Length: 105
Image 1 (tube, rainbow, N blue to C red):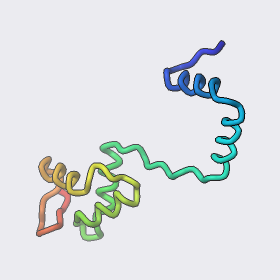
Image 2 (image 1 turned 90 degrees about the vertical axis):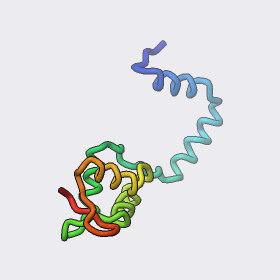
Image 3 (image 1 turned 135 degrees about the vertical axis):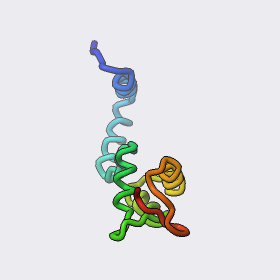
């Protein structure tokens, strides 16, 4: 008998207990051979603002393309660069300086 902190841990324990030994060994051997995929950082408002600041050039301008590149480098595909810039603009955090570029207020 065992106790588990949450339902996720319980589900994993039940799954492992019900798995045939041969299958468990096969899965374990395959998982050791293949590298683990890179997991993106947890997407939080502060991490998105940090990425937006990193996408800003030396002159203080932000573009959709630079933000999209920074999001892609962080493995973040949602929200989109267009959405983030639209939200920041509507909240008055950035202002459009010319077509396709924004500046921090």
